[in-house]
Length: 302
Image 1 (spheres, helix red, strand yellow):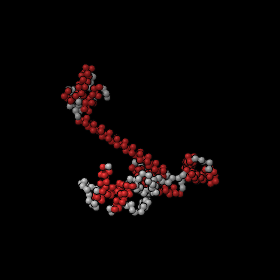
Image 2 (cartoon, rainbow, N blue to C red):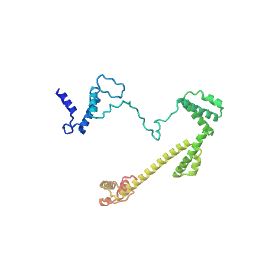
Image 3 (cartoon, rainbow, N blue to C red):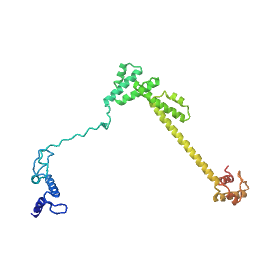
Image 4 (spheres, one colour):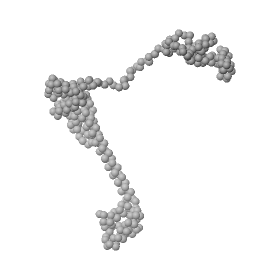
């Protein structure tokens, strides 16, 4: 009972942000009343019916809140006639976006296209149009038609017959100009006669030229990598030899040469092809390369 009384008092006398009772008509009082009205309007009455799915359900508490708000001059929005929500179309963009996936041919359309190509190639091979259509009719699968067309193109190419359509010839001729320019440039870069290579490559088709250019670029890249590796190896060897020439013999080399000289004196053998000092001070002044040659001479590694 006390809780209900306290809720009624808060309804009749809302408080401001500092907890004091708000004066009727003040900003805090109007805001409190509007918040309580919205809270009451959002709670539907148990068992109530709704004629439209988007229309808010007004329970008993909501009706009381509406009367209270109307009496005190609050705009509730419920007194206006109900209007169903209408979906508003988004404004059209100036340029339509492309579809996510391009339109593809059906299996029947692709089969028909392959059959027409098969008939055209058969006619170029010397058959009549009737015989060519009869030869294309038994093919039931797309793979069979594609294999037959490849075989026919190879046969026509071996006979020296140009099997391209007029449209393919125009496209190939336009593309071949730039491809032949690339062939000539690669030939000059490789040290060959550019115009001669261009004249020889003019007999190729555009796909053959593209493959030839790709293979040539890969070959030149491999050759450049080999040349670079050879240059780096030669530079490393020269640097190593230069360091060996400037550095003096190591203590291990000096001891080894002295032992070899002592062994040669005991055996009566000579000093080999390298004539060098025989004392420790003189051997220590040798470079590492000369010390290595001295060791080879004393060991007989000629």
